[in-house]
Length: 301
Image (cartoon, rainbow, N blue to C red):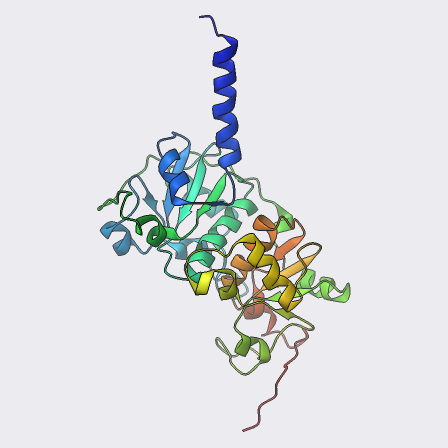
């Protein structure tokens, strides 16, 4: 079969367009235009009952809770062991050639943090072909022009080979060393948690890591919604609270959920390859009295 230069050029453009489209954040228009591609897997992260009521046609569902669990030391909501995650991903019909688009309901910044946390997990396992649907299902269905589907889609299992990246896994000892080196800590919790006047859980100490900068994760989406702020607005927000847009920094919250959105914005949207996510966050840090914390406000009873 003779392949003309024109045919080769068209094939090149198609391949290039898909490669370029494998960007961190995609919109509904992009998804509608690309959802027919064999490589594309739409991964719905809603609760199973909500997924069965409505989802993007062809989407497969995964329980967010399967991506996080208590580790052997008792720290809650840590990344599920990589070998188990690899098997889970394969059962979802995803292999190493798949381009995964993560979809949540999109009802708020918390949903975007869910997507960002799973996105980070894919990256930590060595898979770069992953994107998040900006605005989630709410944004997708808002104009009532794109179809939705009921019921369930059962994917055929595939083999997903993991290639863990150790640089994505930051533990307490690495954070302690970073603090001694003056690396900025970015607290993506609420202002009350940061100041030490509200405790999100359990018996941990209140307050923040020393000299941490408070950047509430909800500020990164439009009015706390499921749609991300523009890059221009994000840079203004970072400047307002003193968070650098480049250089080493570690994002944390209570369990690494909200901080995942902070990491996603810094590392993926702003291109800061030196940004890190502290998986254990204060759920690990605050229970160890040997690790330093500070409170901006000390309340008396």
